[in-house]
Length: 351
Image (tube, rainbow, N blue to C red; front, side):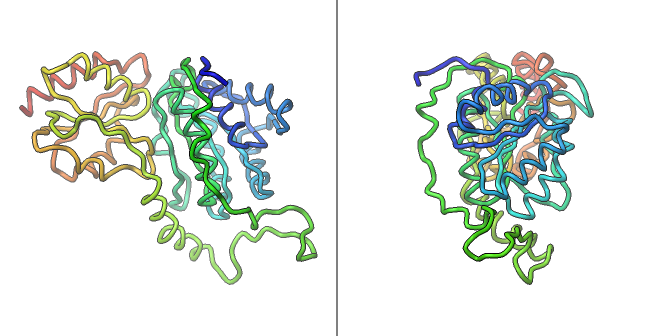
């Protein structure tokens, strides 16, 4: 297939099918409804299963069941629906079941509005679990990340989230699907999966915990063995001109796109660099160690009011630089011009 023009939502759905996704369970909610729509058209033609569930909770529990059978499975939603999926998602982290969850963020809280936003950065479930969380900033990257997410989910037997703001889901962009299959992992067979009656005989059962283990023991193993391995291997980041920057911008998704426009507009008036996390967990703390000695401040543009990623940025900054937030509740409120204005304001203070 040559490079095609697609909506971000549709590109993510196509990438999932190409990655071997055999089942999709979901429920419509703006701004991600094109994802289940695409699956509903394509899965019957491509030997897959599409089912619109009666609720987000039901969809996520269907994902759990399909994953336990060994299938590559996906669901998608937005912030209000993601809240309802978290109980099952937490259970999947405990039972070590892989799946891909695409969350296309909108303004909140609760049902909020349908405007694109970055409101769900902090959204996790109970018990302190972690999932690899990708943050695309264009349509090609959204497709690439969804494709790779299936391999990573299977590799670590852990769900993976692709967290895209609504602008990424709704925007049109060119996608080269010939690039997407590169680097497929050589993964072992899913010997843990349920396939009906097996060679061991008797009734097949899915053991939620290894024999003799406790819930605490399983959680402790994840936190001391699995999570450090993921941090070592799967942290992704783009670093732009931070070695000689006067101010460094830290942003992801559509906010990072706005930062690039702000960098171009300011030119040589203020030397700007940028750190763009491609994974929100693991967060690329070490990238901030590459910031050069001329840096006077870090600014964290986000499409929310008080800042969410800024907390991780402050941890990464470790008191070396003051960290400022600039943001608003929707993509039509935070603008490149607003970022330029904030940079100029901060520069007058720190120069």
